[in-house]
Length: 166
Image (cartoon, rainbow, N blue to C red):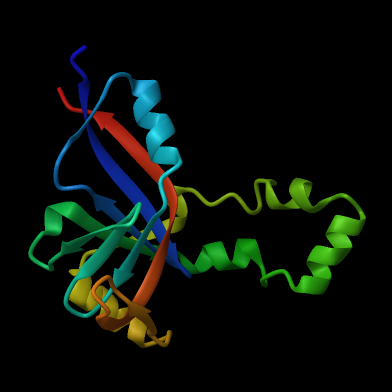
């Protein structure tokens, strides 16, 4: 059976920042359901450094350079979104909501649902995004395969998209 070709993208989050990464090569799956099942179960994260993005995908590492603009994009939460979301919930708030069996009801309410309309596109490249993050966040240290240590910002996966290539 000949498989269908899919272009895979991931949305990753670091605080108020979102990074969209597209894998450089298409992947082949037998069906759309198979593409969805495999990608929703992948372990995906990315480390943004001043020089590159290091994508970790099920133990494999992929380096994305600043000039590969077609593979990445950044956005960040709008100020008015913070007003709607309010202050972060404390551990005591969470305990109280769990005790009242209301945690899911609150977290999945429209007040806390964030959509693409809640973000502003950042037009700079990855080095410029790193510089912007440095203004408000402290970079973390990460050990790469091969033992090399890098400093940057860890983005964790929040969504994926499998788009069939025509």
